[in-house]
Each structure stands twice: as C-alpha cells, then as structure tokens.
Image (cartoon, rainbow over all chains, first blue to last red; front, side):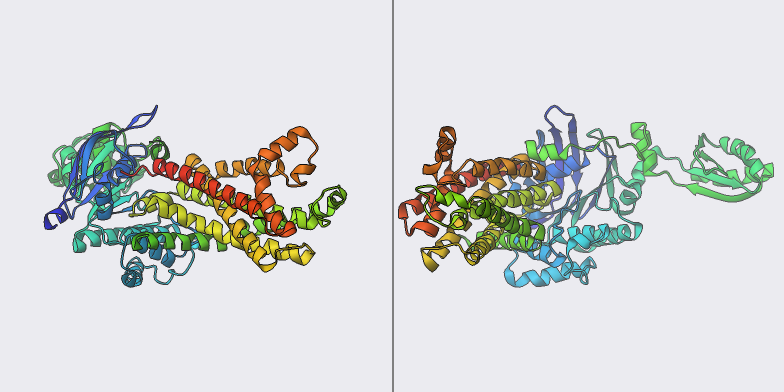
Length: 332
Length: 259
C-alpha cells in the first residue's frame, strides 16, 4: 500500500479517436510524480479534456496505456476511481440541491461511514469557504462558489490524485486566486498529486511544478515553466520614452540588442540576444543617445513565448474548436 | 441487498424526492391537467351512460380511471427529463466517478416517480370522490387503486429513463410525450371496449394494453373485486416495468462507458 501511495500518473502512447472525427489525443506520453502539480496547457480543442476523461476512466482510450495511482485505467477502473477525485470542465451540480446536500450525497456514494459524513462535509465546506452558504440551493451560487463546491466534492473521499479540468475558467481574479491557494495547499501539505488542465498561462505558471503543452492532440513541450522558458530563452526589454517623438529612435537603439518585439503603444521593445546581462548595456546606450526614459522593464520569457516557439501560434486565441466530449461519452 | 447498495439507493432516492418536491412545475401540471380533462370529459360525455350496456350511470366514475393513466404518462416525462438533465450537465459523470451501481441509480431516480405517483393517485381519488364518483370496493379498493396507480407510474417511469439514456437530451424525452399520449387516446378511454362500434378502433383499443389498465381501475370503481381484471392490470404494469428496467439498464451500461 505504501508503494501504491507513491504512484502518480504514467501515460504511454495514449490515443483517442472519435467516430468520423479527428484524433483528439494522438499518442501522448507523460509522467506525473506523486505530490506534483502537473499543468496541462493548451487551447480549446487541443485534447486536454479528452485526456482527462480517459485518465479518470470515463472514456476508454482507442490505443495506448495509462496507469493512475498504479492502476491500469482500462483494466482496473474501479481502483482508479477510488484513488482519484475529479472536478471536470463544467461544475456538474444540481441547482435544486444545497451545498450540504451535495456533500451528503457525495460522501455517502463514496462509501464514507455514516457517522463520519457530516464532519467530513463540514470540514470540506469550511475549507473552501462555503460554510455559510451550505444550506442555500446551488442554483443561487456564483461561478466561483460552484467551482469551490466542485472541488470540495472531488475531495470528499480523500483522493491521492486530483484531476482539475479548467477549474478557473470564467472565474474572477479573486475566486481564481482562492482556488489556486487551495490547490497549492493540497499538494504542499497533503501530498495530493494534481493534474490540472488550463488555457491560462499564468495559472500554469503560478501553480504547476511541471507543464505539458498540448496542441492538436500531441504534447509539443514538457518541463518546468522555467526550463521551458529557458529553452526558448530570451527576455524582452521594453522602454517608454518621456517624449513620444523619441519612440522611433528608442526602437532603433533597442534593435541593436535583438529583434523588435511587441510593446505598449507608447513604447518599444526588443528580445535581448545576450540575455538579462545586456540590460546594463541597454541603459548605457540609451543614456549615450540622450533618450530620456519614463519606464524601463525587463520581461522574462512567458509560456506564451514557449507556445509560440513550439507551434508557431500564440496561445491567446489559438483555440478553434471544442473537444467532442459529449460524443465521446455517449457514443463509445 | 447489501448495506452499500442500500445506502446508494437511499441517497439517490432522497435526491430524487427532493428534486420532485422542489419543482412545482413538475407536480402542478401532473395534477391539474388530468383533473381538468376529467372535468371536461365527465361533463361532455355524460350522455354516453344512456348507451345500452354502459357499466354505470355515472360517467364521472367511468372517467375517473383516466387521470391515473394520464398521471403515469407525466411520469415518463418527469423521470426522463431529470435523468437527461443529469446527462447534459455532466452530473451523471460525477456519479459515475463514485462506486455507484447502475441499479442504485435507476432505483433512486424512480423514487421521485413513486412519490409523484403517490401524490397524484391520492389527489385524483379524493377529487373524484368529492365530485361524486362511486367506489364500490370501499377503502380496500381505494388502497388497491393507489397501489396500482403507483405501480403504473413507476413502470412508465422506466420508459422515461430508457429514452433519456438512449437519447441523452431532455428535448428528446419531451418529444416522446405525445407518442405515449396517443396510446391513451386509442384505448377504451372514452367508452368501454364492447361499446366501441368502429371496427378498426375496436381492434386497436382491444390490442392496446392501456385499455386493460383502465379496466383494472374501473373494476374497482364500478364492478367490485374482479381478480381477473386486477391481475391483468398489475401483470401489464409489472411487464412494462421489467421491460423498461431491462432496456434502461442496458442503455445505462452504454451511457456509462467507465472502464
């Protein structure tokens, strides 16, 4: 048992094809260590949710194998389900039931002994900040409250591995940050392995120890956020002149240090070919040219830069199709 | 039944009952619409009692059997729509990730139908009797009428579950409602079988199981304890239940493709 508890997620050549459709997932390989937060990043239609459905045993793979918590997702489905919690893409809640009634149902169906259900429910509702709203019908909850309840339900039976499919999509920044805090705490304090899909770069950056970038069903890059950024590597320096008329001259100076990059309407930017160490040279060059600077910023490479480098497209707005999940669940 | 399965059925039954009680839009039409039709029919067709061989001089008593069947047809729509909504919203996936057994899911969902069926049956019976309908079998007959009504409601509810699991959409379930209603209209709803003069209609109504379900109610209301009619009524209801549950269970296995 102790050995099993150390197992995370191992995926080899996982494929899912839909009837008359594309290969939603096209032979992915990945490994998630126990206690790790793994960010699965990609635009809409990239194959993220289909991967989650397969790993949570809700969708049989067309080919390939995967083990979750040490159990084969095809041959040992009940063992996998007993080991995982999942908050899928839409917070699937019953608007006519209260938060407490949801918890009561979930704890009972997960086989928690009757005497422990109420305490477990109260503890989880408290943890996600829903104690006061526990007796209100979910139909009146905000999007953030629904997501938090979804998370509490996923944790009802104390799973070792947690799947979160775009948990913060559509949430305001406060709700998003609160959810990030809780997910981070679960991994850090309770050793829960988290498989998190997202289309938000900052979410993967803030939460994930490692990130896999998926596009058109294939993993195009994998590593820690810093490794991935270092791989494509060059930071961007952006400056705004005090006098707007100096903007072109400013751009020309920056261009000496690397290719031009996108900047704010009043400024100019360039990717530093020599890395961060060139910043001092940039400042000296601007000073010697007599260009007075209002602001000067150094931007580290972002995961969007990584996505751009790996796919030739920017992640923002790259999604063009929803994954055919409903067809998958219903048609197989 | 193991304690785990009992817990699952109990919890899902509780949810189903809560959902039913919290949706007046499900309860009110299922109560009002059949009673409205009862009022219209018993007022408009009362001269039918003058036909030679008509079994009673109270058309209200004759027509009181119909609301029990109409209420059962509402059960098809309500249970099916509830399950279809669970499929559409992903709630079924949430349930699928627990150790839930298919039998528990279906049984739990039918509890809502049972509850609604009970409320319907008692309401129709009380309203009918207050309006002047006869019940020759007395209190015992009333209990059997309620039991038969609930049995039919749950049985037809399984058909709603089957359609929901096959189609996966509430709209598909609701589109089946008129189809099921046609079965009621081509039965002995308005006249006893032996007084239907049109040959094709007589043939269709005689082959329609709904006619025999209606006759089971009417035997209790009008004739007395006729065990043959009751056995046929309960037998048809149980057959529909077994067929519906079998179809729904198979469809559930297809729908829940968890490994």
